[in-house]
Image 1: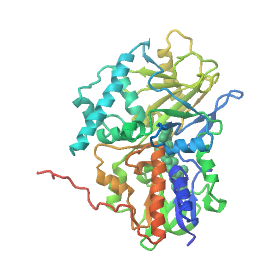
Image 2: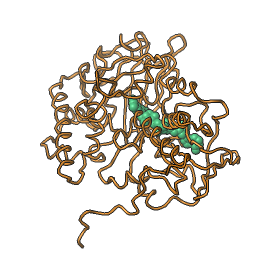
Image 3: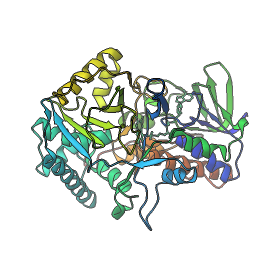
Image 4: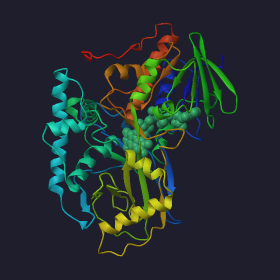
Length: 472
Ligand SMILES: Cc1cc2nc3c(=O)[nH]c(=O)nc-3n(C[C@H](O)[C@H](O)[C@H](O)COP(=O)(O)OP(=O)(O)OC[C@H]3O[C@@H](n4cnc5c(N)ncnc54)[C@H](O)[C@@H]3O)c2cc1C
């Protein structure tokens, strides 16, 4: 065997799993990562014209929920503090200007109502959990509490509360788990960390916290960068990985931290094919896409608030704007960006940059009808959905995904092939801290196996069945 554990993927889950094995006295592992650096969906890039360049985040940007006195601390926030990352609190709800396709229009009353509506959905979801009622879509949840947005303004406000966070529509998102993901992250009354969103503005990039943490324990011989996995062979007696180069590596255990999208799209092949219970779980969860579209202008001409909300007649069309040319972020940068999600992200990824830029400029000109808007000097957006190393941005729990499915997403196969990542986190799917906790948890379970104390991660459910079967 080349090593005892092969950790596939060097994002948050992979690095924290490696650190946990090291803490458990196991140093016989290797991280295999396709990219040239550690970080995964923490990716920074230099943006802007020469002389006015800034390191921006293509992927995760915020520590969502930091800490409250005497409460639990977001473990990513602990890393940020340990490694001295520069962050800035980002005010999502108290510093926003609203627009539609006629220009600036004040619909902040609707915005405030949409915050209350989301809170009421979470309360209704909690009541369903207490009564052991089935899950519903968040759309059904909204309708049951009497919130039925009909105008472009109301839909934009709803989008900001829901889609901008889950990257999926209310129809696609589970009412119960969307609610608990928000509560367990943001609400100290439910064990959450607090309602701050600390945004990385560090010139080393957000990824630097993970790389600095890795530098505290990882030896060069434990890391293979620029190494893409193509095939995974597993059996009860061991595992083998084949890289794109043809090189083979064998081990006792594999920990796959690949994104759900990589598993769904057969970018890596398993031999034998994964069992049906695992495939149903992998394909039952959704990997959504969240796309930030960056523009730099010769000068700032837009709002002085941190955020802007644009209501287009088409829901989800270039809705959420954020100013980086703001005293709190990158003053003088001339940069602001717009975010699109879900199907709209998939759509823009299929278009040439020039067409997306033209559409975005059309929206900007309708938001600022009295200003002569100059052409941007720089324009960029990432294509997460089509990137074979990710195939999307983060997971969203659909209403058709049951707790048995989630148990199966986490469960190992043959006690040799283990899985962890943001998507396997029941409480914090989608978030950096979800990936952190899952990396830690699964590495503790693998360490117990290695130390001969039993492989204790919950086993899978062979078939996820209805409590009351359909009577047809
Ligand atoms: C645009 C965007 C915005 C986000 N915003 C936030 C935010 O503000 N706050 C927050 O908490 N979370 C945010 N997230 C989510 C967060 O980034 C993820 O939850 C987290 O980074 C996932 O970590 P992971 O270790 O599970 O997976 P990954 O980071 O995907 O790690 C898996 C690794 O596997 C590697 N890999 C894939 N295929 C192969 C292969 N065949 N061979 C070898 N290596 C391979 C990948 O390169 C990657 O490094 C955002 C994500 C995106 C994309």
